[in-house]
Length: 196
Image 1: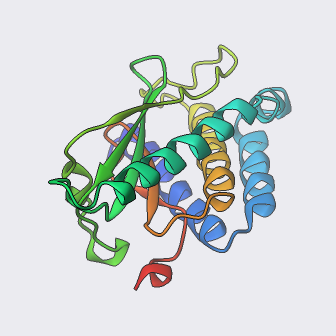
Image 2: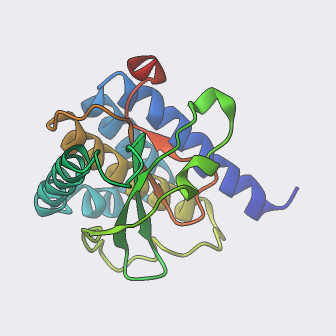
């Protein structure tokens, strides 16, 4: 197995660890865990720079987007729109980290290992872009070093945590999930048992 594949697998393993923290609403420990991980692989200066990014506006826009989507769909149940089963938020690192909301009319729990549900949507809505990270090659997908794994993992976990903070502040009757474009497993911010 190539070094690239090993490092990419480490990134996805980190996201699974982060999910355990997030689904227990243990956000402070998640932040601390991955800050330490980044320090170990990339150094204190890089970890501090990632930690210093302000997500206040991002959280506000996430809350606004979720609220508006649910209000719109709940009020339009009598028309031809399918009921929303989940909301998927995706950001694209190759497109200025822009974000898009996808209200989906299908949903599958994580233990079914099938995230195709996120493709079942009728329309999408512009969401907030992820705040700018310091210019340190975070969006470099080559993973040529352990340092790149450390800084990339911490950056995407920070996005995940801040998204979860926004979600926890908004009453929402459906699952809300997040992922970057082409992420292999969409990240939940709740245990699936919450919606069983």
